[in-house]
Length: 153
Image (cartoon, rainbow, N blue to C red; front, side, top):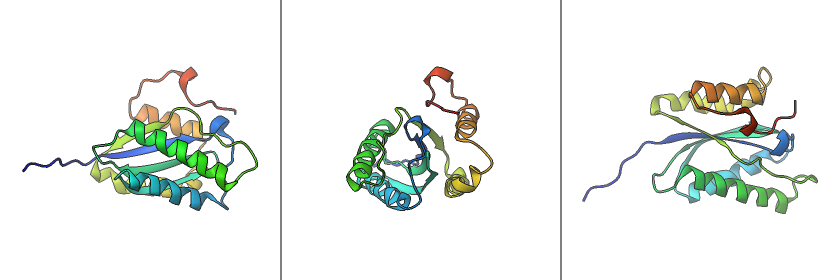
């Protein structure tokens, strides 16, 4: 009996609404473990997850039965509820609408994992805006400035 065989690597990028620096080092690992659980429950494999206080990146080996949009929506909704229920921040937590999703081949995966795991070092040299615009341009994605994340610089 024939089976379905795939190899789908997708990097997802979420920003905190208005890029507020709300994800604190004291609880970011718990958030990352929670998101990893959501990803795994949807039959994907979490390759790497990391971020800085105003945004996160994760690389997923996708199961073909789930859509990127459905996974992203569930991760954002469930992680927001988790942050609120856990009372990690006294401020209102919300992810910005939208997200970035960038696909890679297997040979790129180790480099992307390293890039994600080194987010804190990377952002000592580059802003989120610079990083995100670079990803959009590198992947030749048409975009319009008014529809990007809301940036307060």
